Image 1: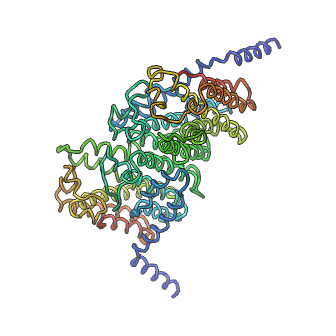
Image 2: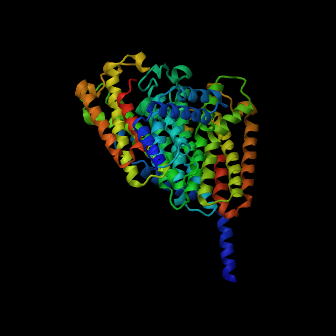
Image 3: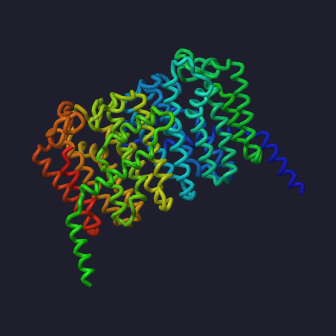
Length: 311
Length: 311
C-alpha cells in the first residue's frame, strides 16, 4: 500500500516537473537522425544536397514533435509516428524553399543561412521542393510500420489536402494576392494564416493521432487543439516580426511592415495581438482536458512553447 | 454449336480489327471528364484556374490510357484505375508547368497554348505544380474504391518514387546539368530519358496492374513493357524535334538543336535513331506475349501509337 502511494507521488511529481526542454531535445535529435537517414546523399548529388541543405538547417522541428507527441498521447510510440513526423518537416521545408523564391517572397535569408535558391539556383530550388513533396508521401507509404494500411492512407489523404489548393498553396496564393492591398481585413488574414500554417500543424497532430490509434473523439479534440496553436503560431510570428531583429529571427525582420502586409499587430495593435495569442493558448489547452494530464504534458508544453518562442 | 462458332469468329474478327482510335477516343473522353470533376473551380479561383488551364489543355492522355489499359488487361475495370489514371496526368502536367518555367527550360508554348506562367505568372505556376503533386496522392488515397488499402499504398509509394529525386526530378536535374555540354554521351542521354519520361509511364502501367489485381509475374512483364515504351517515347520526341515544325508539335520545335542538347538523332544519326525506335517497339510488344492477344490489344496499340505519333 505504501509502495502504491510512493508510485502515485512520483507520477504526480513527474507531471509537475515535466521537463519540456529535455523532451524537445530528445525529439529533435531523433527527428534529425531520421531525416538524415531518410534523404541520404546519392546520385544525382546536386538535388540531394539541395534537399538536405534546407532539411537539415536546424529548424525547431515543431511539426514532427507535434506528430510524435500526439501519437504517444493516444498510446502509440515514437517509431510508429516517425515517418509521418519526418514528412511533416519535409513539407514545411518545401514550403519555405518555394516561398523564398524570387518569383514569390524573394527572400535571401532563412534559418540564419542563405536561402536554397541563393546557394543552388532557382531551377534546383524548385525541383528540391517538388522532390520533397513527393518523397513525403512515398516515405509515409513505405516506412510506416505496424499500422493498418487504411490508417496510413487516411494520413496520406489528410496531408495531401493540407499541402494543396485547399491548404498551404491556397494560403500562399491568397497571401500573394493580398500583398500591398490596404483593404485586407481580419477575415483574409485569418484565412491566410490558417491555410499557410495551421493546416500543416493540424495534419501533424491528426496524423500522429491516427497512427497512434486514436478514436474519433480524441482526433476531434486534437484537431481543435491544432487549429488553435496553428493560428497562435502565426500571430506570434507577426508579433516577432515587429519586435525582433533579423539576427534574432534568423530571417529578414520587419518585412511585413516594409511590404505593407496585413498582420495582427497592424490590424489589432500589439497589445491586443498579445491578448489574442494568450486567449488562443488557453483555448488550445482546454481541448486536452479529456486526456490524462501527465500524458498530455508534451502537447501542453508545445502550446506554451509556440506562445512564448522568441524566434 | 453454330452459335458458339459465330461467337468465336466475332471475337477473332474483333481482335484483328481492334479499333485503337475508338479506344483512345473513349478513354480520353472518360479521363477528361474525370479530371474536370476532380479539380472543380472553387475558392481560391486563381490557383484552380491555373491548374485546370494546363490540366484540361487537351493532352494525348497517354499515361491515363496506359494505366486503365493495364488495369483492364489483368481483369480490373476503368473505374478502379481512374483516380490513379488522373493522378498520372496531373503529375505529367505538373512536370510540364515546372519544366517550362523561366528558371528551367523557359518555354512560351505548350500544347499549342501559352505556357502556364505566361498566363498566370511564375508564382502561381510554381504553386499550381505543387498543388498538382500533392493532390495526385490525395486523389489516389481518397477516390480509389474497391481495392485493398495495401495495394493503394503500393501505388502511392511507386508514384512517389517516379516523381521525386529518383525519378522525374532526377531526370530534369541531370538534363539541366548536361545542357550545352558537348561531351554528353548515350549513357547520360538514356539516364535523362528514362527518368524524365519512362518512370512515369512505368508508374502508370504498374499502378494500373496493381489496382487491377495483377500477380507479380504480370507486373514484371508490364514493367518491362513500360520501360521500353518509355524510352521509345523520348527517342520519338527527339526525332520529331528535328523533323517537325512548332505548329505541328504545338510546342517550340528545333529547340534541342538550338540549345545544343544531346539527342538520339545527334548521337546516332536520324536513320539509326529510327531503327532504335523500331527495335524498342518490338521489344515492348514481346513482353505482352504472356497475355491473351485480344486483351492486350490496347497496350499493343499504345506501343504502335507512341512509335508512330506525329506530335
